[in-house]
Image 1 (cartoon, rainbow, N blue to C red):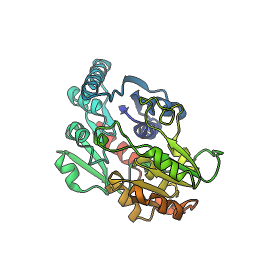
Image 2: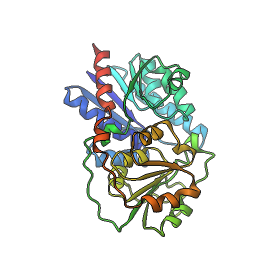
Image 3: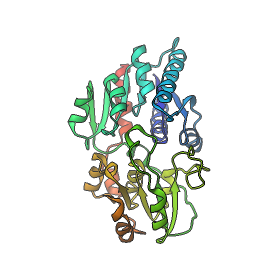
Length: 325
């Protein structure tokens, strides 16, 4: 079977590699594509993969987003004109879904962000099968016109945290890892980025390492001068504080106390892990220091809890093989 996976972000690269390795082990061919983005190609390199780079992330304006997306679709169409994949898989890649649908290739997509309205409308309706966490309400897939829905017990990050063996990183302790808000995403464009001021306050408690998003601002503080592998970094942290969702779940699944900030942290998947006993806490900026003082340096044994969750990669492979048959 010939499988195509397109990854648009660092998280999606993690997912792509997990799926690709499982597919290859089962004897299938896997075509792995991505786009130029601060986190995609560097992470792929760290993971020992060499994806085909098609297009780039261009968040400057709505026009730049639309035009770059259209260019990627055209390039993909030409790439698969003579030899199409048997199935296309993504974590909501708009360009993969549009291309595969147009070429008659069945699509499998995972999804976990109900608040990403634009992406949901541009991906889920095209998919043959949508694979989602049981944490998400049925109205999420129903309202986005999903065709076939497969629900799993867990969250998407289990795909690469299960069996993960982090590298040991030597850094000044206690280590507090922060993740900058995704301030160039459409769903976060009205959100204020207060990571600098909060990092300064947390600096009174320990060594703060900020994982930056982009370097377009050009300032020293936000200048993205190096790449951080978040899964490795949070595994070595004494506390994680983030405006993003993925890194909080990566930390909590590894037993590291993780604080999610703002309404974006109060997601279904975050609440799901918290209810299952993983150390993930959603709060507001004014209460971060209180929680940081309480949980800094504490580690939690979550091995049994992690083992009880389903790995979505197994489900993705099973669905893909059923489509080929």
